[in-house]
Image (cartoon, rainbow over all chains, first blue to last red):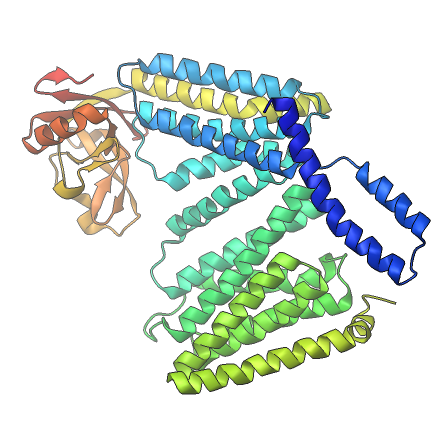
Length: 393
Length: 148
């Protein structure tokens, strides 16, 4: 199949898939007299003429980019001692300059090609850091390279329109930041670990707020928002694990740094009610309420030996409220993640506290029935509830 | 202004890397050279990937025995009467003094032979140390000859 025919094939396939689901909807609307037959015909014609996003092509293109990137890194790793270092570095810099110049000169309309080249370019930059480390025999850790890389490519990431480049950047740079932090905090006990995670979440919160108010590219804002929520959820899980399994010894007291980070994070969280301008009051309340059990536990940790069940209570309460928050924000991905974590935690509660398969099974049946009743209740009274939440008029 | 910003976004990373390479080249040429024997501290993991890891024998007592992990310390390499003329900067990690020179990239075909030669004590390491104590690997010397 020739290239032009291939493109046409994928375009037509995506059109057909989209039209099939649209046809079903239109048929239901016509059946219920919401639209006339002529209007249905006009909608069908309009939709069929819309350009498609060719997601299949983009997916294959991305696969090609990543395979190319891994190939580049593999070539560097082969460490060709027969080639002088000067030649290796010279070729590398020439390649980078060529990539940068070509991407720079591309017109913004060719955004798929441009985004792909920017992605290859930033992967090449990471490979170049590896090459320089190899030539000069650096013995740093991988997080040092990723940290430098993340800082170097940040302006390009901010400039990127699609989410692929910011997503790769966040995936590599944020964990590198955390590892850099851990080198400086010198984790010696559970309090240090909690401080590290808390500090990371706070920094992500500040970054998200700055990106939002500086009106950076939406892709970058969305990635930071997702990273922030992932880190909050990771923090809840860490506190749960600490209280349930890894309770700090009464002999270890937290470093003053723990209290500083906790206070700073608390101020940041509670000041979010003033900065989250696109949130309704109920959404702000839900967000704050989800954090309260967590802060309570962190304050009490050094002074009271909390029962192991407190971890479960913390997680179940916070995740439930977060679930409502993500539901009200229509954040499907985070909603699904939170509901999966909630289900896992429920199961673990029964396994740990009740014990025995029969009791666990009975408990899960009861829980399942409660969940079904809640879903039926939500389905029946959704509109009234949303009206009360201020989501609909 | 917008175009200048775009230039910066695309070409600044290359400039940063170029400055880094220039800095390393300058340090290699301008710093003082020292040669030390090397040994492996964990023969099972002496070879990792395509680089060798080893311990540098400075000919002095382990300074990390009196310091905590991650402490930054300076070791004197060149003493004259009561004055230290040259120091090397490093940190303590797992009770070892690490100066960032404990890794040498080699080709896969030479790795096994070099590993054996290090164990036999036939290998030395030439390093370059800047006045501020930061060190860089220059080259390896195997049986009196520079390893290429």
